[in-house]
Image (tube, rainbow, N blue to C red; front, side, top):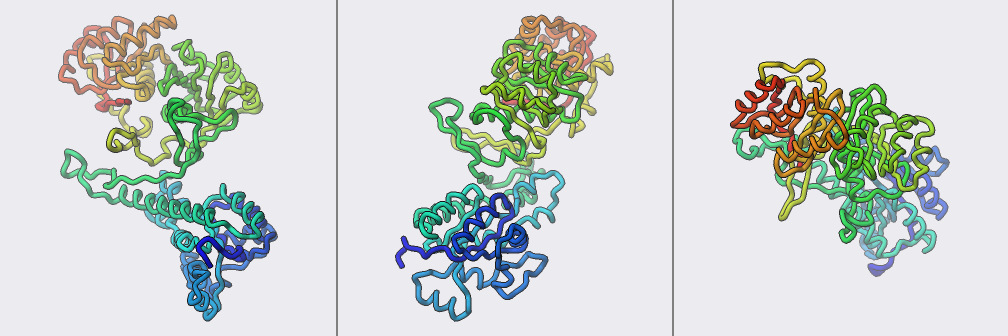
Length: 532
């Protein structure tokens, strides 16, 4: 038999963790006269659907052992997969031992990556989700793809079934080769994820500049993610773009045209920001180009929306709105008064999705898991390599605000402390240099992405003035220290009564003196939050 020929698929081994679509696919195989061989959970699913299934234990003559840790690792399975159909000695060996060829493997693996990203996963649970039999079957089938087909993704089931039905049960050589290539990519990515987890857990490489502290970042850094979505283009129409990974763990789109590269970037920024307010009172944030133009916390989402919108009435057009509560109809109607490209909420009250969906240009997105649940580091490309860092943690999971030091003679009042905590969380998600004015848990002016801190301060004031918002009694947050007293003095002149900043400047004493001179309460957090 030549390398381009293969016998019809007569026996298929099905063993899947993700059972999406497996019953329909197995039924199509059975209709072609294919014998179905399967393992415990998959066999039960197929049997419950009325399909005839041969258990792997029947095939091997050995019951699974070690609570299922060993079930498919047997010559009856792997000889059936690896036997070369045109090789007389191989086929004679099968016949002598009473083994039969297996022509198709359908397998996906334990969800190791998803499990280790869950905050409560310990080493024992992680190792329990290291699949052994699955990768071995996939590699055996892929190695022998001259004769055997191998399917790893539910998205491929219909394509494979269509070809089998069209070609009298035969998979073409190009199809078998493409499936094998995908199988090897699947197992390679799986092994990389396991290595990455163990490296993060046990890496003993010293951190840069510290010979005693160990780094949580592995050496080498490896990542392999499935392509989740092809995009029409990248950041600009002349660039190609694609989305990789498992974004469906954190959000899903329930209305509107396909999300673009820029949409996805904005959604990620919005979800990281709203995660700071996950357990807060009703909060609404409006973003444009990954920067918040306005954020507010209030007694109702509708009130929060109006306060966030009041910060900047121009930028929100075509922007993104994200909330931390189920979106109600009054808030949805308020949002609908201007064109909002993306609306994101953890849930939607009855009729709200239908109402928002009346605009075909709008995307409606549900966020399904907190951004903090992602264990992936922050990765950026640069010329010649990658920059990798641990993520800047959510502030309500740290003691940063509670341990902030009062640097001035006057301590903040309780209401000022609440506003400082609010402004600090927002400022953390504004591009550096970043200045945020706030009062009553609502932004008044946001200065983002400026080349100097004074420029950022002036921009924040201009935006507040343009929106006819008075800064008297406000607080001001700066993502990094005030390098000179003039920034603090300018904020005091505009009406700020309290300030929050990391501290650490060689001129801290000058800034503190300026704050005291203007009766401004100021706290130092000891931690900056650059965002570039």
